[in-house]
Length: 258
Image (cartoon, rainbow, N blue to C red; front, top):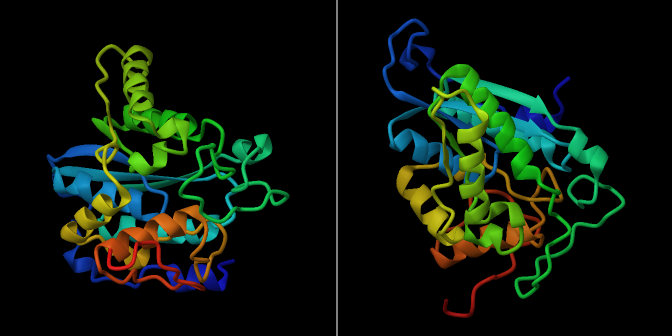
């Protein structure tokens, strides 16, 4: 049964007469996009579309606190992009393994600490390797040519599986571990960008950020103080654009006049 969060976040009915007919030919390249429902993955999906790919959306729920809201947002973005497919997979083993405040109710989600040098408690051990492995399986099974992920430079300052070297190594592993005729590129187009760069680019692409969710703590409203909220709010504040989602608190994350 849908709860109120699902109802509020579900996409409105759109004019199906404008959607591409199911049996129409489509010679675009195809890409799997890891679509979490957050602003980075949504921007990666719009980037893939802008590069001429037809989107196959893959969403994973791994026991994170805001999984219901994230799923609803991911579905909406996929609908906006007229994705060729939307696949949801459960990765509950990540919650069973634990050791992350995103999946363990016994661990508190900490407030943002922009000066901290330790890996934050929100790190889910080796999560991206798990998610990318599933995405590559999906891509190989469906003949897609690329897998897109929205990781960026401020991610890898805290998360070891968001570093450029990780994606380069994973790309080599895909080449070794798939059929000889399979060619799948791992695309992390924003890996050297800041969150502000991602937001600015997404606004240029017309990403509907009001339909995305980033907060680690709450389904509604966003807390405004966890790592994800802080980086997101800071990006919009630096661009002098109001973040369109609802927050319980909107602290300033930019220097005065910045």
